[in-house]
Image (cartoon, rainbow, N blue to C red; front, side, top):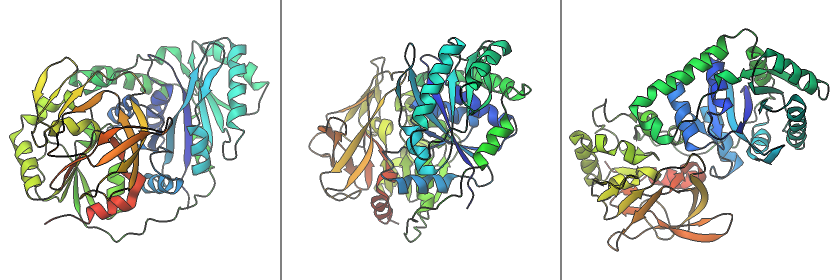
Length: 459
């Protein structure tokens, strides 16, 4: 089985749109058919890529997927055999003269997916210093099996002459291909999550699209066809052990996937793999999906759209009627406060919510990056969602706090920090067949649990 695939790894540069985001947008504009995946990216990158591409991206996380088998099943389910499947990864953050730390995800994915890596390096420093940094990183990336570097791209280059100097100094030291450069004048300032949820952000997104189109149209600035060919040189795809479950034939609605979700399209891919009929439900455009048996609320920045959403009577009545009818409702991460009595937005203003659970939520302003922290989740009680002692993986969200859940609806989960191995708190509240958590749970981390949960659908 052939699945053309390639990892693009870019530097983390504070305050700037990542170079890989501009590159993958330009790749499509240059005529290369591409399917996009991301790994080790923050929520802003995921949401921005969805806004640029007008479609969901798939998030590959080597931890929260639970196993390499699950990660490969997710990649295989979402990949397009007729396209270049590009995984955008963070390479690391540079210090004054070298990288402070090279992140491990690029190598882990290269080993799991058996494909090459194309790093993007900032050329803002002198040619000699940049070449030294490149050689150090190439040595680290080439140290593990499957971590072969297929070529490199420079970014933040002032002019063709500067690129020529970089290429000459670098080319004397290694045979790895140079595939071109991204000019400095195509760099754009970074967005915040709140910016992206604001409808007025479309003007700034269009500016980034314009930069990508300029990069795509420049003659021989990036070797697009060679980049495509490198992905097609990847070795034959080895299929993982398939997930063996009878098809569920369940209708699932994902609320506002493209417009609201910070997750990517992972859960939709899992529902389809388990035999469900999965669709995107836009509350502002579509009638409430009364025919579905499962409603999934993805992790999102709930306070940015809650007022517009909760004023839709058809939506509010549809949710209340679905819960009364014992339909399966799953509310993930930042969407959770919408189901409490009220929530407080970062400006301190109090807003009424659906009132289904006794808790209230408090949002603070998201940071520019590192809002999510990986956790292991243990079920502490039997429930309609999971059995006691079953485990899942996911992330705790820095900018969200749930208060006063009360004893009427006790929590069903505990979670701990995987680095410090300490318990952090409780989550997971259930009313009927509605399950709400303020953790961002990756359902791929326990496919058997999700399969059993879907079997509880009520007609």
